Amino acid sequence: MYSFDPAPYPMGQPLQESLTEAQELMKQQSKGSYTEFSMGDKVWLDTSDLKQDILSRKLVP
Image (cartoon, rainbow, N blue to C red; front, side):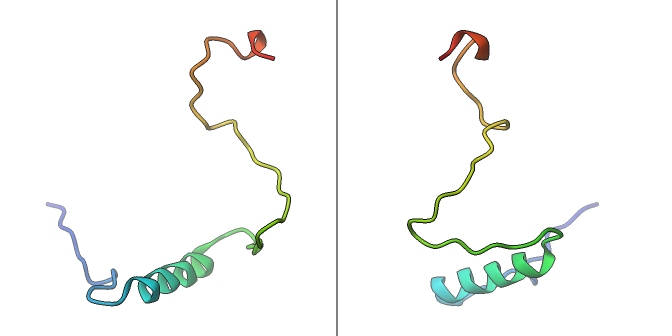
């Protein structure tokens, strides 16, 4: 039987502190390189996994 172990998740911490801790954990576990972006930076977005409400991509401009 599977169970939920809440120990690795921060409980009772302020929201900003929990968010910062989660971001650091994600950086450590990331297999790729991490690039930090700032406001105003131009980036390329990959939309291949986004659900679109169109029937065919060829029929849309």
